[in-house]
Image 1 (cartoon, rainbow, N blue to C red):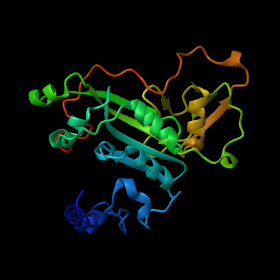
Image 2: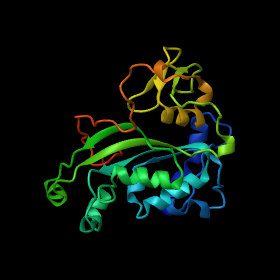
Image 3: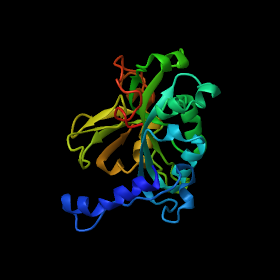
Image 4: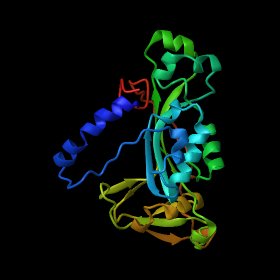
Length: 264
């Protein structure tokens, strides 16, 4: 986003403040680079509850740096919630230099394995897949350039690990039964934690394995849930093995990127 585009956005702050009934503005626009977040004195380390991104990380030439910078400014237990484009194999360098493919958010797509390794290296928990959908390339010329590479639009949650002294001492070696007890704003009836797990308010408890329980406990959502730790392996419900990544849907997106059509 350019300085000129931000100038337009800033001109409408007062309008939208009044339109939505706020006494003062609750939004601020800042110009910077996603790889250099901590260079901005207004973006303090360990200060944000959640950072949201939509189809931006793929445009960065240094995605590991992006993850490191996001990690730095999140609070312990904070969440990076973002959608982006992924490739099922590394995109060749000659295609990465193609400006049209960059504009379509395809040249900068990374493999999920690179996201996972980059997230873990930065200090995040294992990424949790929330949604996944194939991306169709409808332009014959671009499809010819891309060959057999397949793309998906994925949304992930990444949580910043807490220091050992701040972490819960509860033993969740065998996982826990988790109940959604008090409603989260905007998710009063149900809350989708991952692609495979949706909690319904005051419904039957769901079993989460050790890794997923840890993530939910350290998150800002934890106060809305009741955790009953399983103390004996024999008590683990007979459920399908829980995994972070899930099979892809058969339905293709009509857009060539994870954003709305024409916005990348």
